[in-house]
Image (cartoon, rainbow over all chains, first blue to last red; front, side, top):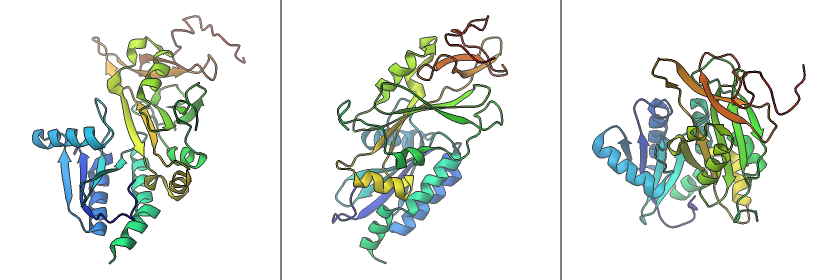
Length: 121
Length: 179
């Protein structure tokens, strides 16, 4: 993960999801918005079942995420002001509760705490 | 971290973080799923999640590495699956675990590493499918052939502890089992 000590700033969050996926909706849909509020950035929501959005989602996952012929969702990405795109999280295939724990851990992480401290109130 | 080009098992704190909390059997029964670590020559960790009846929810392979371990895991599965064609690339799905989503102990363990890297996890989940006659089949595992030799096979979803093709209809095994 990108060190929060770099001078680049968070610019946008992207989530790749599907409405039928219980790891995605409402769990990750809600949490990515919460993360966006904390980072003060907008969210781009890419639904793999909408043709145009799905094409962009495939490209983002292929280039920056966990790509495979039938890739896992949700996948969350953070775009930085210097143009970098950072993969943040992929849903846990084991169970929805495990994906929920991942979000909880992300919000309590050293990484996010450092990033928010650097960004200021 | 010298094996296989720097690949290694994830640190203990990460392995613990990767364990599911209280998984239930996937589309088969309501029993809790047990996780069984499988011995292998791979540098990472193979784990099979199956219910007491042998129905497999998911099999995972976790490696601390910069390379994609999907091919190695696929070869491992092919050698233990009957028929081999049951292992399809489309059923192998990768996930990168960076640390912040794994809890503070795991996040710090990964950050402390001399050469920080992520943990790559490959999931093998075979969804139940129906035969032309409507019989639903799903993936089962047989552990009767040793800790390094789980045998994966398909059987009707409603089968009660089905025997694997290697055990045969007579129930022969390659290892002695207790009565």
